Image (cartoon, rainbow, N blue to C red; front, side, top):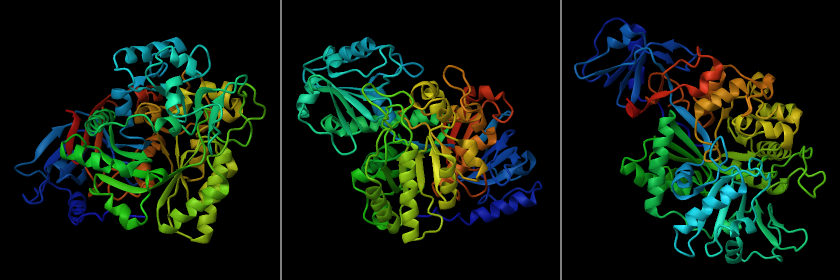
Length: 568
């Protein structure tokens, strides 16, 4: 695993200046470019010290401390920003997402989300939105939609090919479920994909068929590439615009580093071009998907990381099950409310336990960091088995292998996660967006109360992150903090009060613990001398506001490498 770069030697001088204090003025060659003073600086360093001011030089933090000490470092050319009592935190991490897919969806797909994200309340709304797009498109062009949720539309079911045929029969239509794990095509799309009543279920997926006629009804579970591979990809120009849109959106939420969970390698040329145009200001770290050509060696992986401080491909992402809200997550106990025609249905694995273990062993032995998508506890069992077998065969110290989403780990599984040194990234936003339905439909009250068991993990000393999985849900780290602290569902119910965590612990999960999870704690995640000057400025202090107000704190400014890239 590639390790973070060593801190530059100027960091040592920075620490000395901070310790000595006094009113000494630094030599011009050592003077800061910028001072941020009169703030509440929540550093996330050491025992989470709070300071008043920060000095920055050449994109790095020079010193942190009191107003008087930091002001004493200024030189003739130093600029000063008066924070006016506002709160500064390390820049937030989007710890697991699919950048820049949110831009692709926002700019080039039909938004089919239901409230609280979108406006679709029934299948007629979905059909009308798709028809409106089809009416504006040349015949034969694909119409793409994203974000529908079968449990939020009035009919409480997935649209079918026949529903989508009402939008158009001359345009192929393909829409993707909010989870990203199911899709629906109209008759024209199925025809182009050669999906018929004779099409078998692919490995790890299902082509749903009418119980009476045997004809495909348009719904495909997991293996959505059966149709998705035929849809037109973005042009180079569209890819750049999607990156630009996402960059601005993420920065407006205080995000300074995003972790792309799969597919990062092929995106590198577009990221480089966007960077050259000034359209990419975020720091990007990517875990490349095994289906997109995983590098054969760490040296090859390093070549995919052309700007180590900003663009880096850092490991491998695998997948072992689907989504709980799509009923494709793999559980040991059946779903609370069974799908129509099913009995004792508990989802399914993406591959056999043996096949997963073989893949993990290959990448573990080669030195990669591995992240595995696993929502259901049966899938988590498979992941724990695979990582354990790999470590027994080829022990590695501090591999920091990840479990992505990790929705339903049992207490015994958390013990195993601790023993193996694994680090989960919890999709805690499920508590808000799907919590009521986990309780009533998917998992039942007892298991739903334990989704994303942050407190149980914390009691064991497990370091973890929390994420939005954008574009599944909009990027918003403060909403994640609010979810972790309050565990309130969309309907205002507390889901699993015993799994709530303190505000500071939640903030660590989107700052320093996220940096640690990705081997970046030496360069970011806290406000300390020598690290990148990546900050978010908030209008209010999250440690002192009413915890129910956390998600509503305005982001005043975002700073990357000492440069203000959002706000003033």
